[in-house]
Length: 463
Image (tube, rainbow, N blue to C red; front, side, top):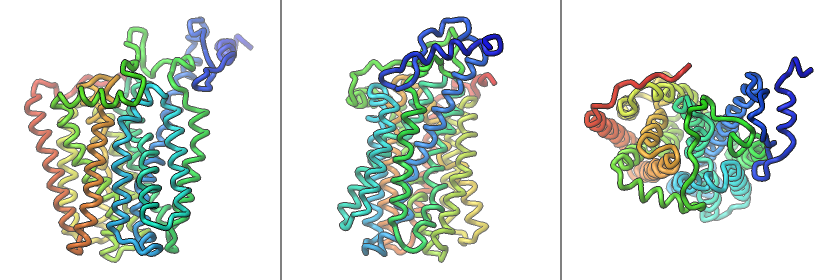
């Protein structure tokens, strides 16, 4: 038996103890010869992809809850008599907190732990949306769908993907962050047809129940499948070699205040303001405008909510392709040049869209091009943060950059709703967002010119 499975004795020895913090089997004898067997090493390497898969699901769900107000806008208006400005204010609160909590969550992941932070965020999301079933007043809607769900989903914001990738992957980091980043937009958009279908009779409660059940069901999955660190299961980061430097360890105070410490350091560097300013434009043009108001905009042109949600779902599907491809490109080419292309395409798409008729063909073309570019900006932005601030601090810095992203999204959520209420049209909002996208591209043109000594292409990663 041992001749056929030489790694089996070591595997059995690994399960002789349980890590007190993670609940995972300890493996203390990784130096044994059988531990270097290719089959055993492959088994351990698969743990990283299991962790990434669970992280993908968590990011998918947390982003999905942030997109729900776009579907609930009409049903809440019918059920409670609330106007779009009020519903938009609740959505903006959640979007803002989704970003604001990010850097503090990143600091907690270094100390409290990635697994515990994920479980806490999922539990809060589930409890908040379930409690909303009894809401009657606007402040209760703001509290449940805005404040509490915003904090819970913020614990599973984009910084989670950055922390997991830095901890579990030594190579192909751009590709993996591209895949995990795509989950945030895919979660926001691919669930929309299902959520819209749940509101087909004008009721909003089925949406709250579905999100609560999904959030709470994922808690035990995280507990069982997400170890805190590769070495807790006798593994290394994917692609890590003997001569590779170890993964960064936290050096800040063991509290969420590390987020403030890192921010104080980051704001002294121009790169932080470049990333934060352009990511403000990113959030404004995506989650805040298109993600929240496209269904209502289509409704102004006589398109039913379920049909309009289908276009958002299409954006999510093409985002999965576009952001994954962006991660692959980020591992190979200058991030600044990629960002010039992404923001230019986005700005042009938003400028053209309001001036074409809202036919199925035109909206499909818009969904394809806008989807490919939806958050393709994340992998090169995180790469620039890693290069400027190091792998230890980059997730927290990126968390603050995401705060700027969500500020832009919140501004667009409220602003576009106000423009629609006062002018009767979303056209000025989309045109203004288009010019903001082109402005972000121009900023990176200048940055790329000043960074002219950087090679256009970096060395390709090992296959």
